[in-house]
Amino acid sequence: MSLYRRIIAYYKPFTGGVLLSLALLVVSIGLNVLKPWPVKFVIDGVLGGNAGHYSFFDGQLNFGTSLLASVLALIVIYVAWGVLNMLSNYWFIEIGLRALLRLRTELYACLQSLPLRYHDNKQSGDSIYRVAYDSQAIQTFFNKGFATVISSVLTLMFMFVIMFNMNVKLSLLSLLVVPFLLFAISVFASRIRRETTRLQQEESEVLSRATEGLNTIRIVHAFGREDYEVSKFEEDCKESMNANRRLTRTSVVSTMAVGFVTAFGMALLLYFGAKEVQAKHMDVGDLWIFMSYLLMLYQPLEQLSYTAWSLEGAAAGAQRVFEVLDTENDVKDLPHAGKLTVSGGKIEFQDVDFGYSPERKILQGLTLTVEPGKTVAIVGGTGAGKTTILSLVTRFYDPLNGKVLIDGQDVKTVKKNSLRSQISMVLQETLLLNNSVAENIAYGCPGATMSQVIEAAKAAQAHEFIEQMPQGYNTQVGERGVRLSGGQRQRIGIARAFLRNSPILLLDEPTSALDLQTEAALMTTLKSLMQRPTTLIVTHRLGTIHDVDKIYVMEHGRVVESGTGPELLTKGGLYAKLWNSTTER
Image (tube, rainbow, N blue to C red; front, side, top):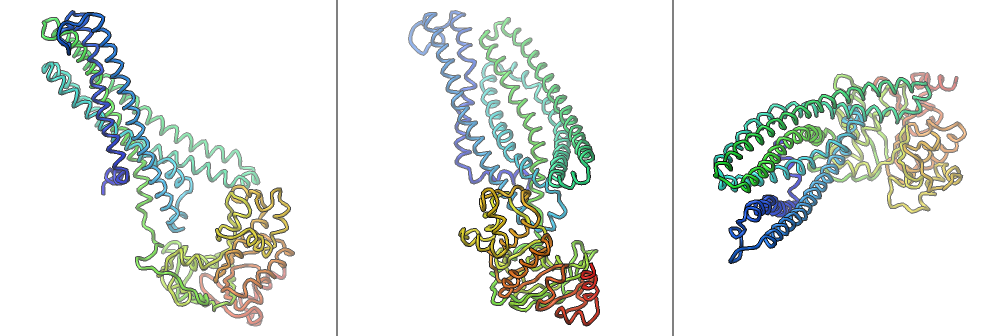
């Protein structure tokens, strides 16, 4: 489907509004074409003494009556045109805004549904720019494209009919400039589209740089890199400025070229029109009509040229939007995906291979089992693939080969929402929204009561510090939880998982941001919680998981040891080495 057809498809739900706008537009154009006629009546009929020739009544109209009638007609035409034009513009803008809302929502929903692999390879600032700015192209297409084209074409048709009826020679003369205008449009249109695309890319880079710099402001300050960040931002801004300058230069030159063509056409018509009046082939009022229509004629022609350039610029933005919408989701629900039914919560990895790129595998032939209601820990060195295992259970990614099963059901064959609704998860870096503490705890369980939120916070050893906050559970945590310490954020994340109370619990370094005393207290609560759900925990703090039901030791994407903590110590293998290295510290 072509770009323009895809854009038009977004306006189909608003067909009734479009037709209403068009009806108002047609009437307003008709009134616009009538604007010069009261003045012609005054010039030829009143001042020229031929008022009777234009009278709708029997007999001769006197000077005062004719003049008053002309003035009143002028007022009525302008007021009626203004009202109808305003209503038409309002509805065109309203429909454009509704289509923009639809596209933006669809684009954001698409970004939310795309797998993490897509977001891993994209700058967040670029995605934000596409949602906030590139999406506006659909409104530009309608308001500055469709509406302008229809208005200009209808105006030209109405005026040409009248002009040819008045004077064929001058009408043909006024058409001489049209090929030159079309030539100017074709010359500059492709350049404007190319330079607009470049500008949008540069603006996206600026937004990405600013987003990254502000999100990592603590690191910037900690290492004294403020000047470096500012200099890099300035470089991106200069690139954007240069792209903007090139686009502006092209736009200015194109406008000047169109202006020259228009001025030449006006001069040509004025010269030969005056000769026609001198030869008594037309009245002065007729020349006024021609000059007025010529101005009105070139205006829609100019608008069409500007519209072509605007559409070229909008096409670049629309193309960037549809690039996202056309992105293939490689972790999508299958057509006949069903609902996950969890009886015990058994998790199985069967000969699983995975890599963030096919050339570099993180997991190789991974096979392991987490029995229902048991707690299993995954340990190993950095880069062993521990956290990747959790991402495969939640289906953030799909394995390259092999299967991940829950109670015998391949996670690929169930709906993602159904799968994730059965899982509670605590990430290594707890991510909080810029809401209250209570809202963050209840994020995974929207219908939770306040008493349930408090109970979850107590279980996560978070209630005491929350109560000491200025507004307690209603305290705003700031963007990404910036107003809380790392340990506080972690405990709120754990409270969120407690409240969700799912049959499967995934813990990714749940105590990494806690001091030893708080960790010991929290692990007591975690152990009581882990007695019911199937729990898979990833950690490097071996003391917290030494007595779990089973431990898998990983190295280079493979399981090299498995057993209980005491069993693994007696083997003297990798687990024993890791244990000794942590206890020696």
